[in-house]
Length: 571
Image (tube, rainbow, N blue to C red; front, side, top):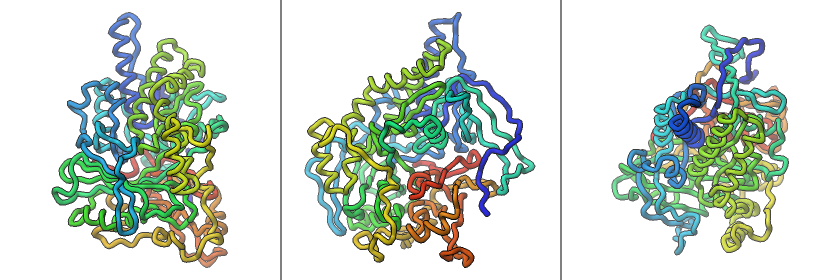
């Protein structure tokens, strides 16, 4: 019997007052905290008789250390960072400035370099970075201002008074697998906050609560996602220059899937390599981790990595929906920033700069609210206007229909993308519709038994241990660690569907789309189909693909005990 993580009832939880609680210590959360500190310091210098305090401003970060759960490509467009910290280049951990880029279309054995790099993929002036190191650096800046960053504390649920957000409850610690307090039990805190700013990253668990309670997506396109599976390699000297950027499209995907790869050259012969697969493919047997392994078999890529060593692994989902998939950004007591809101430019494969800018604008809104002592929807709602009058909208408006154009495959997508390029983002229609990614998944009975053209992408990768790897070998290199004796943080709301319907209708796709081997179907003669679902929650890398891609939408990812998860050191 599976016991899932849920707040313990009847527990007396400590209360803590707060002015602002920022949930999430990634680029959006840290930029928000740092900008808010800057504004308060400037205000206090000018108004010594009416100062504002930073003592009751908190950042909650579920990782054990700042930056530990931060994973990205990662290329940094410095536009927003330059606004936040004009002298950033003197001290920020930047691996290399981009000096050259190329885009290739791959077939199974050959490559074709595009004669002109598409404008969205021109990266001169951007920087190859380790997002892990970058966020650690930003976090240190925040702590220097006097704002408290609570690491190892996850937000388990939002506190409400009607439709007003009044705070955040942090996770209980020291709860065993049977959902009983252990000897080291510590109840979570109720942070009673004037303003809660959600910066949790894609498919944030508190954001999901908020969206459901307030029906925030009723006028928006459904959010769609991609899953980026990444490896960090150390390669022989001279293979790729620091600051060299390569993008690919085509192989190993077919015309039925959407996605592509990146290769970034960093310092000391370190290469960031990954593949993003849109979570809207038709065949439930497709495995995104295998897609990356097949990609590395291409002669061009295999040559680049030959003699090298894979040193780190990770996976992260990313919001693809664009401008039409943004929910309302603020209301009574709350604001949404970064990937939690959906600020990502899918045409550029970039979102760090948008996360930073949205965090800064949220900070400016919160600052005005604290000055007026008014955190109503009328005041915090000004955040919406700030975003819409900023370069965030200017950038996202130009690609507002980009990803939706690929709904029917690669070739129609390229046609729509080209047309949108010359029509300022419009294309054939003013607003392209879309469907949630899981709705594209087809039942096994509708697909060829042998996989057809997709056969090379289906099922788990075996790996040769040198160039390619099976899922557990890759997982080992993610540094993932959780407290074993705790309730599962992957909530399956109806296990009977998994054991009776899904295994027969879709072949249990959770085994495939999860990049960390969390889900397994094990033999059980007592079940109608001879299989039952088994979880390995300690493997979870927090990508939330299961929450996104499950065809029945019965899986909910909630934070594990604070501090658990991957260790993306150097990624």
